Length: 94
Image 1 (tube, rainbow, N blue to C red):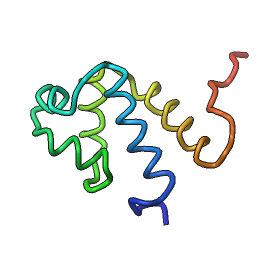
Image 2 (tube, rainbow, N blue to C red):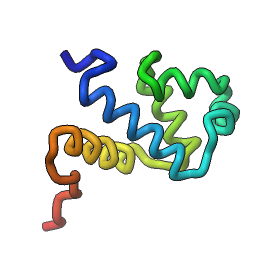
Image 3 (cartoon, rainbow, N blue to C red):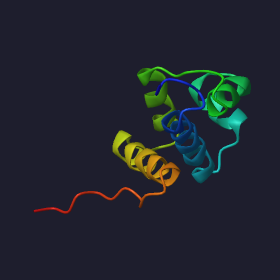
């Protein structure tokens, strides 16, 4: 079932969000301040204790200055890693 916290896709989602925050050099508290939430909110979704809506994800991506496409590519890389596959690559332009 893909909606369980221990599901590899769910874990890849959490890891991708955490990596984006770390790539921007933000602490949980700093990201929380940017999106108007407490540090514990950030901790809970990064640890799988809380689910996020699509709009919440968009707020996080905006605060981290990332696009949905960039996040998706990172997420797909994390999913591939959990399956022992190669990293996601953008399709070549034709």
